[in-house]
Length: 47
Image 1 (cartoon, helix red, strand yellow):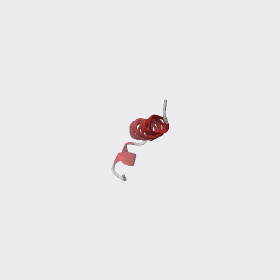
Image 2 (spheres, rainbow, N blue to C red):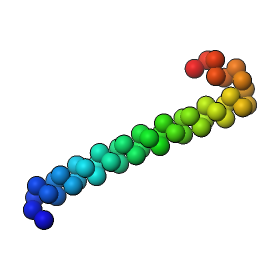
Image 3 (tube, rainbow, N blue to C red):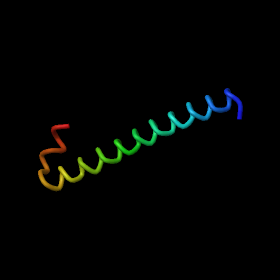
């Protein structure tokens, strides 16, 4: 494996990790909003 292959793989892995973190955060926020709505129906109107 030469330098360019390593650099491309490293950047690809970094982008994949950031994307996975963003998708996970988005999913967790949706779950939290649904839980808030179940606890306090007014919570959905104040977003």
